[in-house]
Image (tube, rainbow, N blue to C red; front, side, top):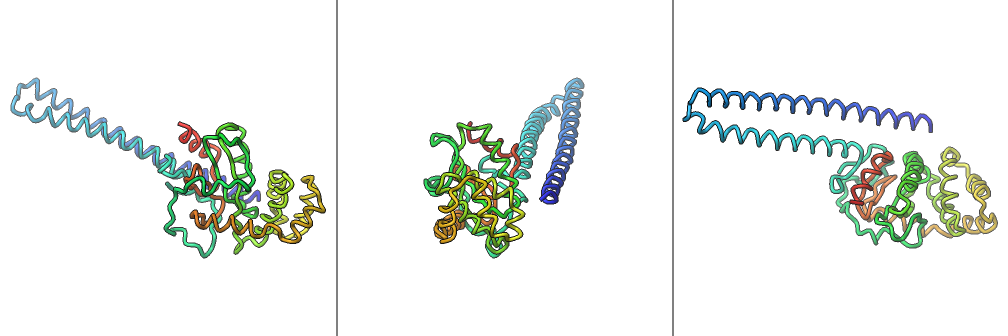
Length: 294
């Protein structure tokens, strides 16, 4: 896991460097444009002093056009920098529309499948799935996650910080999207989480599953029972629930809902119905939240 986190950190640093150099190039272009505008103004002023009225007649409008064009160009470039940064961080342009590179792709599903990125929030905000936050929150954040996905594990800690910073503004709803083809224990982990939810211990179980992701990757089937004990669940009730696959259909229902909504891997987020995919930084989460709270 430390190697994965180091790789993720290196990717972020590389993105920051790329953005920084791009900004420098654009700032140089703006500086050159300003210098050229000053030259035009100086030439107009000189011609005016020499009394060339016929030349001044068309140079003055030309100067106005060039000045206006420079201002518009400056605004355009400023907006380009803004959206370039947002795109690099995974924020859709509809909110403020690109995806983060930290994303466990589901093999066999076309990522360009024609599904609208804007989903009616009510279709995803189910009442029976684990949730945190007030019902009156302005933002409903639906998460599709996989307990074996390293990017989902990384995001869990970030989202916890986000909810602490916006306790009254965000309601988080957790839904399962096990990527079975590459995570053989993800579906079982999702079923175990549903059994924990039955005992109102989902979030405790959720956290410990991610803490023990290495055991899941090693396909240690006893980890589910060990975590149940550590999380304070009634072990007999959990064993009966998990052993008989009580929530198999519930997990499959979440998965199919995700596919229908355009989910192609984990983690995927829906901010009031707007899809964003990939592991996002806390800063990126906050930019989206602040934009939606305006």
